[in-house]
Amino acid sequence: MDCQCARKQGHDLNNDAVSADLLRQTDRHPCYSFDAHHKYARMHVPVAPKCNISCNYCNRKFDCVNESRPGVTSEILTPERALQKFNLVREKLSALSVVGIAGPGDALANWAETRRTIELVKQSAPDIIFCLSTNGLLLPEYAGEIAELGVKHVTVTVNSLDPEIGRNIYKYVNYKGKRYQGKEAAARLMANQLAGIELLVRSGMLVKVNIVMIKNINDTHIPDIVKKVKELGAFITNIMPLIPAPGSAFADFPGTDTQELNHMRNICQADLRQMYHCRQCRADAIGLLGDDRSFEFRLPAEDNDISPAEAVKEAV
Ligand code: CLF
Ligand code: SF4
Image (cartoon, rainbow, N blue to C red; front, side, top):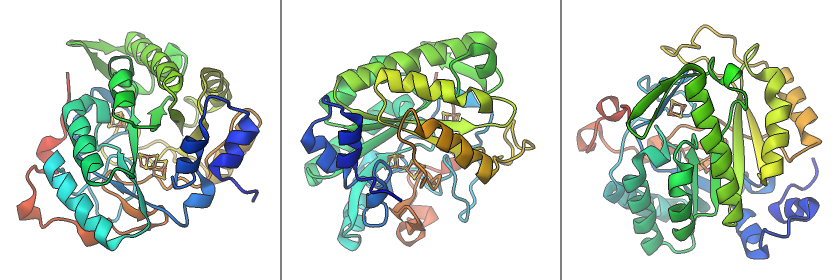
C-alpha cells in the first residue's frame, strides 16, 4: 500500500488551508494516518454517556468485555477520574498520542464533561492530540468552543443526505427541548451535520466523516455522501460495516459484507481519501488500534463513580 502519512495526504489534496504543523501532528494520529496506526496509540475516555438521538443500529446498554464496537464501555468516568486514568495510562504506554472522546453516547450531548476533560488533560499534557466523535447535531452550537479548546480532529457520523433514507436509520432526534421523528428528525440532524462540518473546516480542523453502510438502506447512497462532504472540506471518510447489535432495531439486519464494504471504499477513493484500517473501537478502548489493552486499566467495578447501565440515557 502507498504511504498514507498525513503530510502526503495533505499534499495530494493540495489543501492549503491545512497547516504544516497540523499535518505533522496528524502523522501521530492512528486513525487519520494509516502509517501511524502501528506506531501510535489512542486512549478513549468514556465521559459522555448521554445521547440526543436514537440510531437504529445502537445499543449502549449491552456491554460485553470481548466486544469491540462503538458505544460499548465497561465504565463511565467523571472528568477528574478520566485525568487520573490518563496519567496512569501515559506512564505505561509511551506510544500514546491521542485522547479521544467517543461516547459511549455523544461527546457534544455531554458538553460540560467533554470540555472539562479536555481542559484537565491539556493542563497535564499540552502535547497530546485531542479527538472528538459526534453525531453532529450540536455542532452549530459548539464548533466555536471546540476550536477555542484547540481540538483539531473531529469525526462526524453522516449516514444520509436524504430524509427519506434517514427516516429509516434514526428513530428520533431530541433538539432544543423538542423530539423530532421520521423525516423531520432526519432533516434536522442532516442540516446540523452539514452546517457543522463546514464550521469545523472553516476553523481549520481536520474532519473525518464516518458512514455506516447498511444494506438496502443507505448503501447505494454512500458515494453521494462522500462527494458532498468532500465539497464541504472533509479530510477523509471512513465507511464502516453495520454490526447488528443485540437489542437494537437493526439486530436482525445482515452485517455488511467485507468485500462489498471494500468495493464501496474503492469506488469512493476516487473522490476522497478512505480509511481502510478502522477497528470500530469500544468507547473505552486503549492502545494501538489492533491491540486493545483497555482491560489492563479498568477500574474495579466498586470504584466506578457512575454505573454504565444507569448513565446511558437520553439527553434532551
Ligand atoms: Fe477515537 Fe475515533 Fe478519534 Fe480514532 S477511533 S474518536 S478518530 S481516536 Fe479510529 Fe476506532 Fe475507527 Fe474511530 S479506529 S472506531 S475511526
Ligand atoms: Fe448511539 Fe452514537 Fe447513534 Fe447516539 S449517535 S444513538 S450513541 S450510535
